Length: 501
Image (cartoon, rainbow, N blue to C red; front, side, top):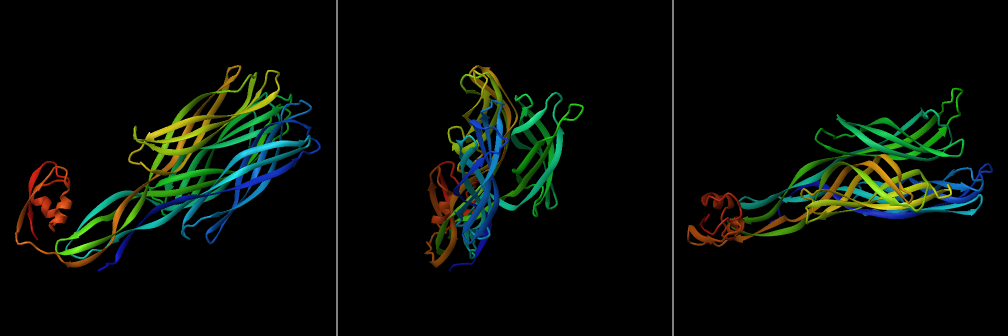
């Protein structure tokens, strides 16, 4: 007999699908730009334009915006030039048609070189990571009467809903008195979430948008600016409730900054236009129950089994400080420091029962050498973050973000820069557990019965009452009750009374 099956739906994380695409371009400087003496620094910011699924294939298209700082031949400070390049890549999904997915773009191996005094070649590799959430079913057989069942309860994750919405901000701010910017050379925008407020089918997300700018003054020196502005967005998330866990994200789509002309009173303002994609994913903890073992007190039963996999999530909300020193060679001053955190791996450390995430602070440093000439250095400083594992021994996905705020820097000595800041580690880490479950049973002939109504069995310490009851075709709860057992494991050698059914 193969009974009808019940099904319990839980979250199933498919392995990430990865691809990569090259993005390259040639940049011809306008006539008013001075000739290139040396390229100092190159950054690349990829933006997703579209992700179209056709069957089992996802076609990802986007653009990379290059920002290149160079030292001109005329010696008048630092100059900046930018250009966009298109990329495209096809990624094989091999997942359910209704699976949710998100696309993460990461630039790697970004390089630029001067082909001649007025032309630059730039190239980078865009790593494309597709994260897949899908729903699977845990089998729960409908059992006939007279069966004894042993069930297992596990905490698991359930993905409720997701949404994303663009946010565009156009405004201006004043530069501090006494500073006049003739050009904005470099920009960095980070987001620090400050509040999540769930409402009926909606989520209000609030954050601080932190603007860092490197500016050229009218005397060809550089100075940096930092401005913080509050932002908010309302996401439509049907199914959200107060106990749900929300993971939000902020992705910079495009930005433009323009320093206005100086006014008669000596003040100056900067216009900015920023487009952001705000996203949200909502999860909840659920309880999955499945049957581990079955036997019948009256019939012989054969069990069909399959491996059951469940995913759990852990909410991460950690803050801390960094204080790092990097060797940069002989220099006379620091012009600008940009630090990009990169998480590169998460694993379980058994000795300390902790989850460990490792990565590097990717530091890009603009400075002046012993002659006062601008130059650049890139350094990677390793870091390790740890949290209690709390049962997560098999981490499979790190959906956390690490941002730096309050970044500052200074020369520790003539060849070392000291970097300080505050970090915020936020998001979800997913873990996986597997077990065997009964997916179906087949009833056979009646069990042969002995003549004794009561059997005495000498149980050893550590034996399982369930296995004893199954072997003797005795109701499990009756065995526990008649022998005053409070748990499945026998805590000491003792004689058990087994009452035949």
